[in-house]
Image 1 (cartoon, rainbow, N blue to C red):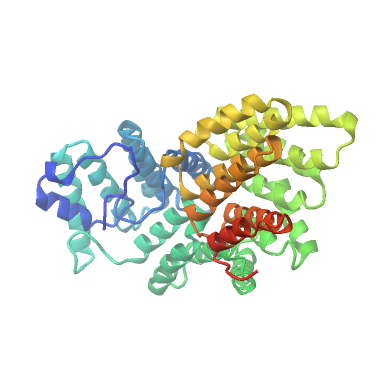
Image 2: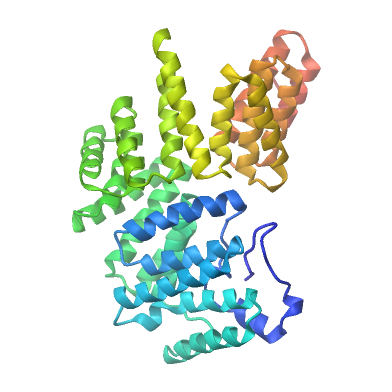
Length: 448
């Protein structure tokens, strides 16, 4: 157990507070003791945007736990007034959605309250909420004074893990499996398990994981035909295995959903066959949520894809549209590293000096960036050095630095590996065998 913090974020030392209080807080089941991978300010701000959409558009009675998640994200930014307001909203949502078992549903929210007041050094209020948690745990005959192993808490942890990233799918899946052991008939827990399985597949890309997720999601869609999130997930799972059904599900979501994030996901299916339709769907989503930076980011990516096959007379207009989209993405979320990288890459064509300045600013952020963001920066910077400045060896150093930053097989890591393999081949063709062998050693390949 730990107080999950982020480098550079507001926190207080356990040595400044009463030791018994700290020990009680560590025993709570809440966002502050769960192991969340919210690694930097970029991640926290991004998650605040996505969780806000989930609060507004969720298909399930989990609005309360999303609001409690928002409170935790506000804590990471030191925004305690907003954190307390979000917890109050969470409490009200839980009363509305779960009037018959509110006490079982509110444990996590009360735990968050205790931690927020702890960071505000208001120990009287900490004790108040610890007392409320203890009272509920006693009423549940829990063997622990400040925690209870009940389905509602397991499910809330699962929803919270999914809210801060699909990368948490496997861990969320375990949470919903535990919840279902206590309440096998809960349709919401079944939906949570299916979404977790889908999230797990988005990281493994295993066909076995895809089939399992499709089976679970198909059951949810059969039971709840109006569940647009389940239909969008199933459409994504079937986009290659059953393209016709995938497109039919996606079209249903596009026609019936007002959830901007679901429309964003639907555009990915449309973009396989019709970029104009994908662009139109993103523009529809932007009209619903003009401040959601990922919609502008994805719109820029669509315009970039259009550039690849554009006629010479069309390129200027499409490039301007792409630049405008990425600029709006940056305005909506100035901390977004990926939006700024895309913008810098496009400026590389028209204004290389401006692009280089943007890359230098991003390089300064490397120490506080997540591993994936670090790899993305090194990848784009290496490409700029290689293709815009012709600096082969400097590009090699950038690719190497990015490759060794993390061995997680994400898209950026795979691209860095590909770049290094290409440079090794170039060095071999130029009879620079020592340089080629040095690259193979970095890649963990010894014989070529």
